[in-house]
Structure formats: C-alpha cells, structure tokens
Length: 134
Image (cartoon, rainbow, N blue to C red):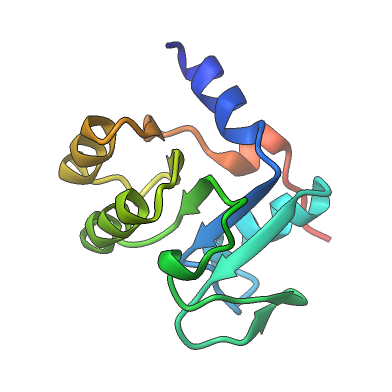
C-alpha cells in the first residue's frame, strides 16, 4: 500500500483520537487537535490530567476512546509511543499516525505485526490537512 493509500484509509474514519493532546497552544499535541477541528472532524483528545482541551472532552487513555474511534494520531515521545501502541492493539485501533518525532521502530513493528495501518514516515497531519494558526 502506498503512503497516500495509508493516509486515505486513516482519514476515512468517523472519529479520531489525539494521543498526547496538550492544553498548551504552541505544542504539536494541541495543533493536531485544532487541525482536526479546523477540518470539521470529530476528535477526542487523550490526556491523563486535562478534562477538556479546545472545548473537547478528554479521555485519560486509549482504552477509554469510544468504539467509533479507529484512527489515532500519536504525539508522544518515542518511548511512550511503544506503550500507546500496546494499548491501541488491545483496544482494536486500526490506524495509527505517528507524528514526526513520535516514531519508534519497535512500536511501528509491533503495530504492523498486529495488522494496524501505520503512518510513520515523517508525514505530518498538519501538512496533509492544511493546518493554519488563527
């Protein structure tokens, strides 16, 4: 499958989780969340301490994402990405987009072995969907 096909399959979902969502506007975990909102996508921030980010109710972990979420954007340090992938496999996530800087070779391998569509080639959701600062 080409990277374009992987991205199309990722984006062709009704709802998205943002793992590593941040309350701080300058952080990529916040920009990715806002990018989904700018594109009228349903998005659920995953943050273990915040109750809401950008007006969206948070869940504390991947395990708590609603069943319609099959695609997650991951904006975490690589060592955390490994744990996120383990939770995603257990939860039945079908598509994982590791934002630049979140990629971890072991996590990519584990996700692909579990049959997950993985985007971890340096592609950035902000570029693909056309994020803009307000």
